[in-house]
Image (cartoon, rainbow, N blue to C red; front, side, top):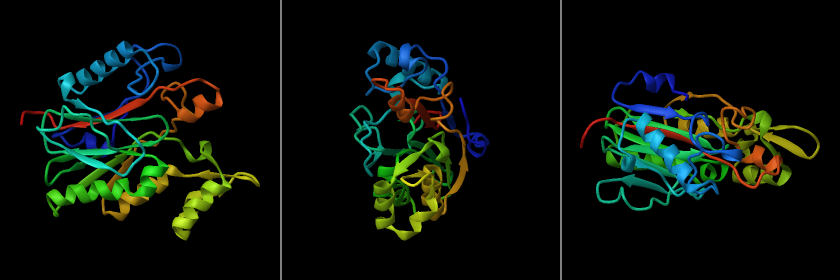
Length: 253
């Protein structure tokens, strides 16, 4: 379990970037696999999510997860929609006693808190969603509720630059979007580059005047702590687990 130093100081919220430790899953999913979309036994995933709800000190049906599709879609969770399937890559809410959760396996989990307006949020920020504007859309959605904000964000465990090897086409796609994206790449060899996803995501937050801190851990490198899509793929495993990150404002609505 990992925490933001800044968010830890704020008494009105609970948050956690859960590792893969503890939990009930076995085999390649060993530990706290919270990926409903994985091929893990449904019963084990359910038990793992029950454990997370307990740790977040909320009722299980108030732990809200998304069906994530690498989009730029943001949903505000309200009393009338929290029981419905949330197809999005970011959520925000003003509701107390509800935890928002994001699952990742190399992509970036971001959790947010607008201290001025008591709004919490979480974002699934992979390269695709970030390129499509999921971070900007989330901040806009918060500012739609109130334009005067004090937003904190923590960028959680994700694949590190030294572990994130990409090809020339990937690089070209980013450069076509903006020449300024050059700063997120370095050369590995003649055909491969290394991509700094954490920096790419962080800069998007900073551009929106958000107070950012980091849980700077590499999901690919730290096998004992995190699930990793890329590591599982390299090991030719048939599937992979997902870690969960969550935030909530305790209390009743």
